[in-house]
Length: 390
Image (cartoon, rainbow, N blue to C red):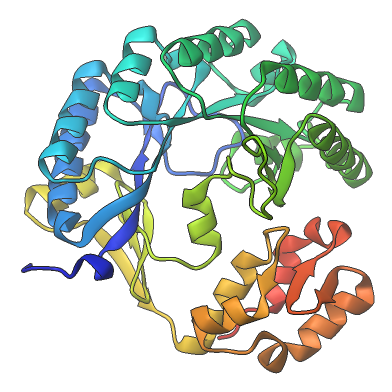
């Protein structure tokens, strides 16, 4: 595609690995069982897609999500890593790989660390065996501890632990115990998500059939417990569901161990999204790849990207979307930064929405910054929707 000016290249890369050992009961993301031949075919297609975008990409952050990226074999990882090396895509300041505690081995952890992966996001979800079974997880409580030790032994100094709350059957006492165990691990980051009953998931069918119920008061109590425990454990909340530590002496509004890849997304930055169903945003155009691994592979085997849809939002619509995502962060939006990013004035275009948030106690305008309050962050999805423009 010709020479690209270094300052103009895209600096962030997301790769979707769609394979899981077993589909979890709550998961609405595109994923499927990892059948051997299809996984190998996917790896070759992904390498081809990397080749197609490499000339426009010098990643500062890389994020392999899923699915379960750690399900890939050593040989499959080597194929991807060597291709990234050949294409000049190594050396990211932050490189995250998601993993399931059941699929972490010393050899795999060492391989990833040796090639430059420096952050792992481990999907623990719970430390309670009965809840792990309820969620359909393939790992045990003991595997969380074992995998964490394996990652530390391999040299990983930046580990995130994923947890879920408001799981059917989970009590406040169980959640409190899980938080205690997670904090005792000593990870650098916590991501804690409330269970959502997504359509087309077994959990949704359980709810529809009366086998699971939503208790909003309990969910709110669990969220409050999370905020208190995380703060007491040395974590700073920087987004609705995300908490991170500072390095020694750090005090910035976004913690040192925050996920920089996600911060870029919440701040409306560009990123390439590769792999089946992956979404990307590059220079004003939002794309989504085919949510079908076979069709994805077929397109790449024909020498073209497997983009199913592409949409270029108008300036105001894009600014509203950026406002909505950015308000998920506890720092909210510095007004001048928003103006520079979008070309729009937040109080000028969204004055009534901001007034409504403030009147409800959900928002605050402090000098040159608008942000959601602790109460408002609970309703960040609703608040964000108020800022969207068609």
